[in-house]
Length: 229
Image (cartoon, rainbow, N blue to C red; front, side, top):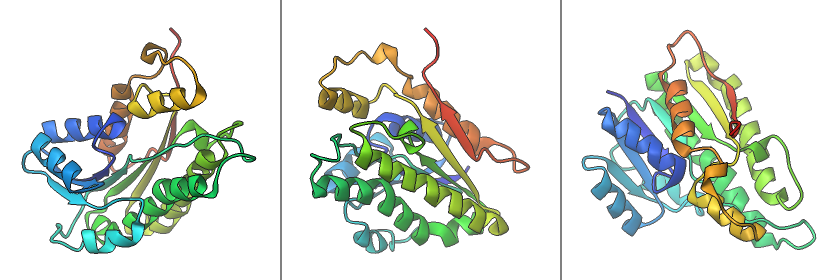
């Protein structure tokens, strides 16, 4: 049985990863935006620990995770994220700030805070990135910048932590049929057909494969794209 910290377990890919880990008996520590969401998560995952801390305020994470956590954490899965589309000419500064904060600064801070515990377990950190973390398209500048930054964070961390036995994985899903994708379509003014996109269960399978890989190997970067229909 392993212990995992997850963000984004309320919906989408993060929720499915949490369900799969919970079903096999792993211990979950779930970061929730507020007390109500924390209560929802503990109801959904009896025995799990839910920590209420809004990733929009990374400075509050230190106090939130200061409560009794295990000395060793086998993995962190960073699956939370927000998106607000808009051109550089039109996107307001708060849209830049919010996406960079939630998608990049918060994962960096949570990783920093928990890194001693991950080192103790010679564990793994998984960043759920995006195809936008590799290529930026028109209207996606702020979100893509946050995800390009997340790639840089993961790449640097991988080099820094190898000596401590910590594995670092980045997964780059293409468009996946999640509530966030529905939000993206609404922002694009496009009709949403989930059958066109990746089933989030497939991305969850990729993440668990990376976590369960024997210690002699690491999946450092993995791109997942919608398959041919």
